[in-house]
Image: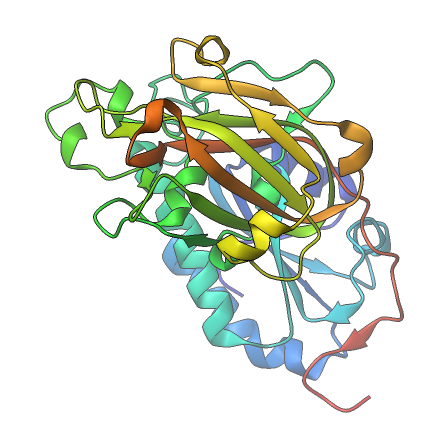
Length: 326
């Protein structure tokens, strides 16, 4: 076994590892599982290559750590769980080498890019404090659950190709428009509409979540009257896929939001309270910017944050191995 791998022997050890490492990649396996043995060499190779301060690779034997397997609803083997800041971000079932390697490397690269390092000091968030940038304070009793978004499956319609990709909306770094650095103007970490002042953003979640607040950050460039902030926003939930603009206009939204100039704070962020009772079991969210302010030709978004509660995990089923006949 690779020297960089940590073998978990208790729930207390696993909890301490989650608390002490920015990223934890956990391999849930069993000695009797054939597919687990097949992918073990790759997992060890990834651990040797990518382990560093703040990034830990661990192996959890489900037979000797049944309490951990039960807590994270491990129902198939092997299962790989990826944690960031102690929160589970993604799960992979089965011995799928390419998916495991790509996801782990992407996660490590993402954290490194946020602030030049991985770990608890001065690394993440781009604000020099080691903490993610906050456009506005969170409502008491609720947390940022943007990490529950399946970013790869988000879709943005009517996006200007000269702006950034949809994933920049969920970055935890400070928007470049607020950073007075020489290279900030070249960093396209915002999205902007193309043909007119409308955007349609489809956001799927990893599971069911409860949404309490939507935070939108919009920082139009100074002196450009043709780019504005959102004014009228329609929200739709639990749609299996994105809508087109005609369908969105013809459908009854879950909530309609009309933003005033006074709703935006000094960092260009609007804290939008949602009708919490309507967003209790949300699996997908569509954010439809129907109209920008001041009759501008285009509308811009720099960051989007989702605040609420992550939903309950699914019940644990019969443990089985993936990739072999039972």
